[in-house]
Amino acid sequence: MINAKELRNKYFPKDDTAFVNAMNQIETQILTAAEAKQESVIVKVPRALKDRIKSALEDEDYTVSSSAVGRGRKEAMDSDEYTHITIFWPEDLVFWEENN
Image (cartoon, rainbow, N blue to C red; front, side, top):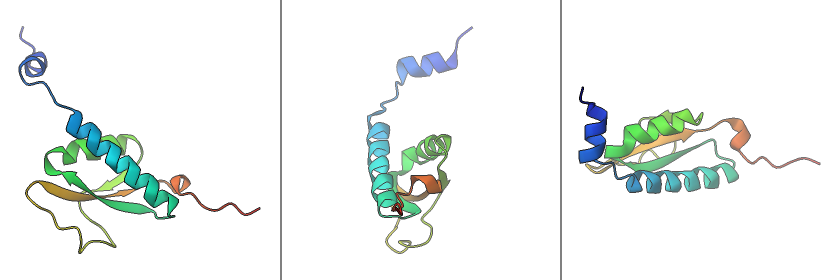
């Protein structure tokens, strides 16, 4: 029996470079926003990778909105190539100042 998944991987291998680069940029933006005590960030992602990125972030316990939410909505203009998502994270990722 022919396995369709094996055939796709053989003849149409995935180039994960764009995905890895996008995830690295998103991670940097999340950490920067969390250090600034923000609870979410709006990021620009390639439209072709949007669902894959959203799924990967949700697997890591982030909450992801399929569009720009809240502040920054006006700046988040989608194009044919890019779209925007909003990423929320658990409160423990926010770097709150410790009271001694």
